[in-house]
Image (cartoon, helix red, strand yellow):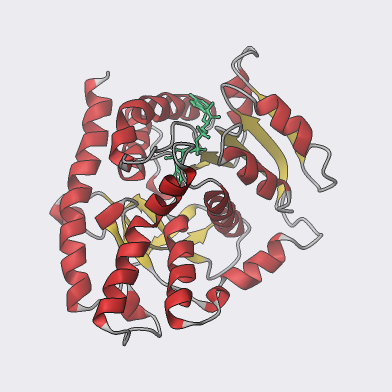
Length: 336
Ligand code: NAI
C-alpha cells in the first residue's frame, strides 16, 4: 500500500525537509549497514553516529558517499560525545547492546541490554527530549517500557514519540509467505502484531490473500515468522543475530517516521508503542499498525478482525507481553 511509493521518494534526488538522525550503536553489526542505508536516504541531511567504539571510522567512511547529508562520528573519547550526538536531533535509532548467540532467547539479553538502554534513555531525556526514539535493542518487549519509564521519571514522556522496531517481523513475513505461496515478496503485506519475540509475534494471515492456506502450511509459516530470527542466529554460529536484514528493516522504519514528519499521508506500518488497545487488561505496550504523522505515532490503529486461531495466539502473546513489560518497568523502578 505504502512501501513502494515511499521507497521511491526516499531515494529521489530532492530533499524535502532536512532531518537530523542519530544512530546509537552505529559501530555494530546492525549499526554499520543501517547507517549506510540512512546515508542514502535523501530525507536525512545530518547523520550522527555514536558508539562506545568505532563510530568515528564508520562516519568517516560513509562521509565520502556523495549524498546530501553530512556524517559525523561521536564517542566517549570526546567530552559530551553522546550529548552532542543527540542535541537537536529529530530521530534516534538505538541498535546498541549485545546480540543473541545460539540457544539464547531475546529475554536472555535483558541482564546486559536493560542497563545500556536505561542509561541511553537518561541521556536522551536530557539532550533530545523532543526526538522520535526508535528502539531496536532486544528484548524490545522490555526495552521500550524501560525507555518509557525513564522518560516518565524525567517528565518528558510523550507516547507518540517512542517506538519499538518490529519491522523485521513484517519483512520476514512478506518473504516467507511468498515462498509458501509462490508469489512476488515485494507485493506481499502481512500485518504482524503483538510484540517482538517468539510467541508474542502474531502474523495475521487471515488478513492476507492467503487465508485459505492449508492449516499445516499456515501453522508452519506462523512458526517460521515467529522464530525466523533463530535461523540467522544458528547460521551465524555464535557471531551474532540478524544484522543486514535488520538494517534494511530499521532503515525502512526510519523512513516511515521521516515520511510522517514530512507530512506524507497514509504512512502506516506496525510498531510496538504505548498503546490504548489492551490497556484495560494491564498491557500498556503493544504492536499494531501505526499511522505516522508530524507528531510521530499520530494514530494507534486496532488490529482489525482476526480468526479464532489468531485469537488464541493473541491470548498467549498477551500473557508473555504482560510479564515482559512488568520486567522492564520494575527494572527501572528498582535501579533508582
Ligand atoms: P553488535 O554487538 O554487533 O553491535 C552493538 C553495538 O552497540 C556495538 O558496536 C557496541 O559497541 C555498541 N554499544 C554497546 N553499548 C553501547 C552504549 N552504551 N552506547 C553506545 N553503543 C553501545 O550487535 P548487533 O547485532 O548490532 O545487535 C544490536 C542489538 O539489536 C541487539 O540487542 C540485538 O538483539 C538487537 N536486534 C534487534 C532486532 C529487532 O528486530 N528489533 C533484530 C536483530 C537484533
